[in-house]
Length: 281
Image (cartoon, rainbow, N blue to C red):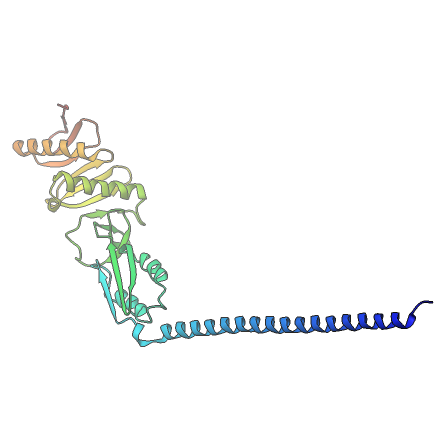
């Protein structure tokens, strides 16, 4: 006969041991889950504390009077109007970390007189501003008024009266701004006269921009004109110098000198029209 009683005892022990093991495993799991929660909470708390500290530090930097801009150094400014300078100084007089230097630099670059601009912060309270300016090179006269322009033909400002009278005067008699081609030719002629040294700038009253005859020099002495046309102005000025010296010796009263033809100068005087030819040596 089987010992059912003993078998039931053995089964009960197994069940009891299994139950104890389950209880121990569940306890370990609860402890591990609790520990993981504590660790996760600690990490979150650490992140919160770090972010709070960082935010407090940033707030302190952005609001501290110690970092308020108190000094602005501007280098290279000679033509920028005083009201424009003050307007940008007002924009820079704030907390040095709140400055949008890129935005200020972009706005400054749009000013007519500014060609290049550079800004930098110098902690704790100094801003350095360096400007490379466009310089007035000539005075452009149109029926709408006079304007100062640089070597590239960019309009810098409108002028009135006798201001900037020492600059070469470019006179466009047609309404509106001259075409870029005409303006480039006129500026090239001014540069050629400046580099060649003849005629003296003080002897030229104005340079007329003509759509059909090109560039025309009007001497201060008046009474005649020098038609330069377009193209190689240096060669034309070399011929002009030789012809003027010859005319001075002959004491002829000149009405016009035309340099538009290759290797020759057409001179119109009170006498019949004469053609002075120059052969390249």
